Length: 118
Image 1 (tube, helix red, strand yellow):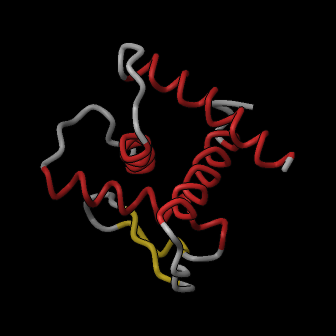
Image 2 (cartoon, helix red, strand yellow; image 1 turned 180 degrees about the vertical axis):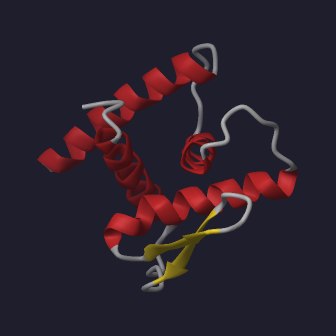
């Protein structure tokens, strides 16, 4: 239960900080945060992305976020600088709420490791 409270506190801090930085204070959602992680991981932050590239960025983010959990492993960068991951273990079938908690936990850990939040 203590871990759940710490996760909730960190998530709120992260939401507030990202919303302030990227959405003029309007609260951003989980998908937007995943997209931002993808852009960060690609490292091409000052360019416009096509719709299919935005989906690819979200895929990169999900792979990167779930890498510490043993689901994915970085494989290589392609000629355009896009990272590729290989599947190590299939994700378990989770209910929507469980998926959300897993992603929030992974996102919080990512931003703690990046020293964006504590």
